[in-house]
Length: 90
Figure (cartoon, rainbow, N blue to C red):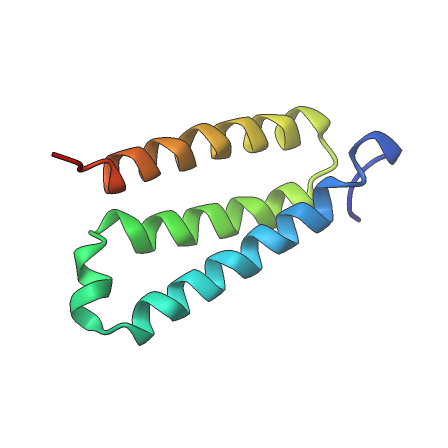
């Protein structure tokens, strides 16, 4: 299992790290209290679950196309979520 060749062997550790970061982020948000966690919106827990599940799939699936697609889509989505959630200046 894991990445299919040396060109993509970096992906599995990166995805594992991303999953760990999501876990720490959720824990940190919960430790800040229910009000803070709820202030992040309904999309937040769905986002964490979906990205973690897809990261695990990308670490297992041997399709380079899937891995690259997931990495690109994840990056675009994460940037979109950050901008929608935190770009509230003014």
